[in-house]
Length: 190
Image 1 (cartoon, rainbow, N blue to C red):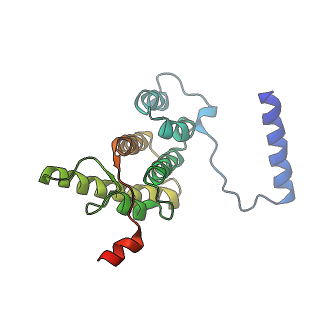
Image 2: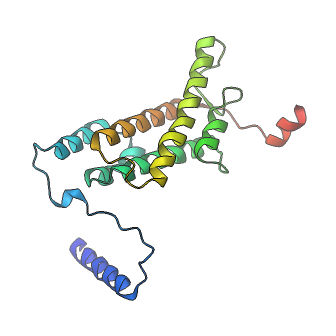
Image 3: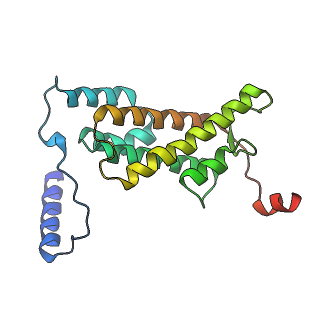
């Protein structure tokens, strides 16, 4: 059944190309896993490290196949999009994404997602620091990897960025949720 489906998709792709409908489609390089690496190659080692290290389903589910196929930039891009999506859903902030979402969700002054009551300097520093890490991850990783083709082309770099995304996801899962205040109420009380 799967083989027939793949053959049908190949024929559909050929027909689309013949008709000239695929001119605007991004052509990805052939996956590197088609020529399976030997178990002792660097690619196989990176894939094994991925399997052992990346365990959060939200990250693993969107990036594993891309990573083992050698599409490192796309694997990282999808992981950070999954992180963004998780925070958007948990915080209830639907009108923002990326840095704006992180600024609103983790704001040190009035966070929607937080880890402590922020009564000590250490707790305040944690909130402020993670706010900057989340916003920085969107600005410094997600945006470039989304807009620059092959921004990440080394498996080791991709793994580092995926582990960082996974850490941020786990930290977001552990965050407490404070109901967002109505922006109108906030401006009227000021």
